[in-house]
Amino acid sequence: EKYQNCILPKKYETPEINEDLAEILGIILGDGGITHNQLRITPNKQNDTEYIDYVFNLLNKIFRDIPARHYYQNVCNLMITGVNLIKLFAKLGISEHNKVKSQAIVPKWINKNQAFAIACLRDLRDTDGCVYFHHHKSNHGKEYVNIGLTFFQSLASIS
Image 1 (tube, rainbow, N blue to C red):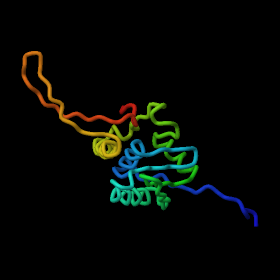
Image 2 (cartoon, rainbow, N blue to C red; image 1 turned 45 degrees about the vertical axis):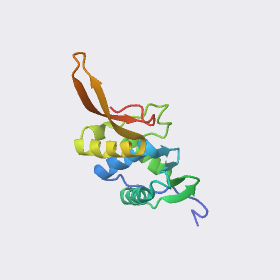
Image 3 (tube, rainbow, N blue to C red; image 1 turned 30 degrees about the vertical axis):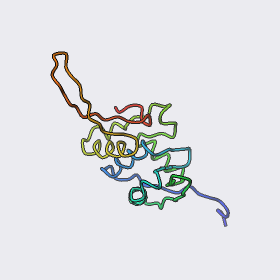
């Protein structure tokens, strides 16, 4: 056999550009990591049991690959291994580098569409962010309340 004992890279089709894809990229920017050959998303296994199943099914739906599920201490690692998948992420605007050190940003194609941006930011907030009320007074003594959104150093900037 010509290819006996030879491991060929899995093929991944470019997924449809839609809210599901924007959502999974938000999850990756929050709880995910990308190496040269693997995607890993790491939610908390005790607090996020339903979310783990949701992300597992979303990954399967978008990339047509069944993620591995490994439980370790307080987390569940959902992983898909494939160099072609990582190349696909690069085309979608997410690289394999450390997202904090490399100043990861939400890809521009997401920001150009309000529905995509909402889906992406919703999952960034769910994974690494919080919403809060900011109470303050103006220089003239008038009280204001604003809604604030912050992220916990997983994402450096949103373009």
